[in-house]
Amino acid sequence: MRTLRETMNALRRAPLLGLLSVTTIAFSLFAFGLFGLVALNIRDALSKVEERVEIRAFVTEGTPVEAVAAAASDVDHFPEVQSAEVVTQEEALERAKRELGEFKGVFEAEFLPASIEVHLKPGYRDPVTVGRVADRIKAYDFVDDVRYGEEWISQLYKLRNIAGVTGIALGLAFATVAVIIIGATIRMAVLARAREISIMRLVGATDGYVRRPFLLEGALKGVTGGGMALALTWLAMQLIEQYLHFETAFFDRRTAILGVAFGALIGLAGSAFAVGRHLRRV
Image 1 (cartoon, rainbow, N blue to C red):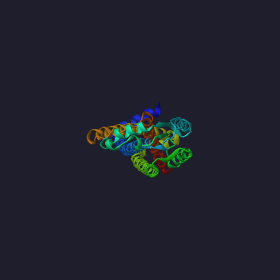
Image 2: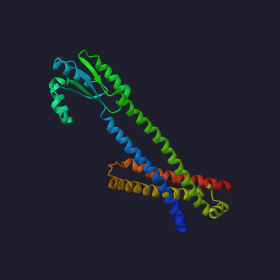
Image 3: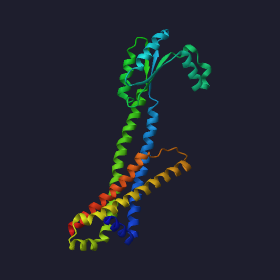
Image 4: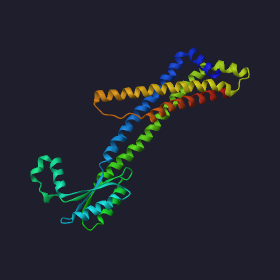
């Protein structure tokens, strides 16, 4: 209770410095939040593209439908497979006419072979796994050809890996800059109360007694700044959707709470570092 009272008194004595600290934390985390929002939407976009990964096994003409259906049922039980469906010649023709309407006059029933269309489970759509499943399907005697866009899948995963590594590197850079700026701002608040700390030490106050109000103050500033950063990020998303007509995803509740908690952690760490450094000099 005493710690909270002293913290509130300190904030009232230096409201402008407290506002500067909160604003610095807010804008530092806002920059980090914007980057996180971009990374989230890139990941979602790649996931949607990844859902289109499929294997198509073309069947030799004249193969009994029962044999094809039995093979599809067998493939459907592969641990990597989400679904395996038989596409007859008639269904393939109707699909081609629907998707390529301008060329529907050139298609004939015999033009497109029957096939087994295979969709893989999430987590099993990488080039190695897709290639392994395709090789197993090729083992069926009546399978004439298997296609799954090998080059396209490889390029997709290269892009995903590059985006992941770049995201981690830039995220760490943004977080480091945010910590440095916030730590410097909180250090200013500690230095502004240097005389008070010195007096407290002279009358016998322990380091823990001196630290507690500053740590609580840093955590409160971090939570406030984190909340402001979250609100600014949400506002930025709304403006992007309104003026650029991009449909974007926002952080889920768990991620939003973690973001505010990260602000509190940064504020706490910055205060602990600044106070500890000052106490060593007193």
